[in-house]
Length: 132
Image 1: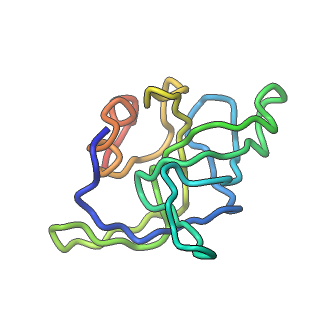
Image 2: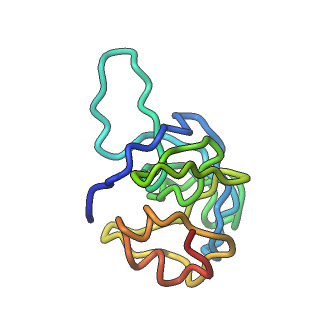
Image 3: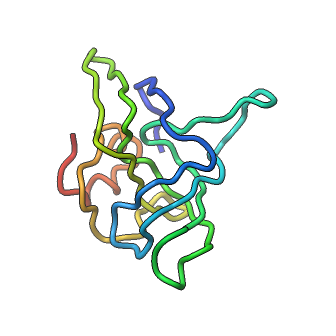
């Protein structure tokens, strides 16, 4: 897994509800923690585009509900700036479930995926229809 060239603004925090945009069976996640979280005391860790986090499934298949899963943020509503100077924002916050190796759990992604996600985890971008 590669690091990001973009210094993205953190859009979601612990407790945020995020839509799942793949066909894994989950529909909505609640963010539990950021992976690799190391912050100051009482400072909330934010998760930006292509950020990997752990979440609890709140809506979806009965087998998946209340399960702790890993996910990556593929779209964020909060505007962020790319190194080229272009500013990007999406209509919603969306995530895709991944396993421990970084491979996507689902077989297809319904919406668009940010280019930064493709740079960090190329296998997620290969199953996406559009990469912006």
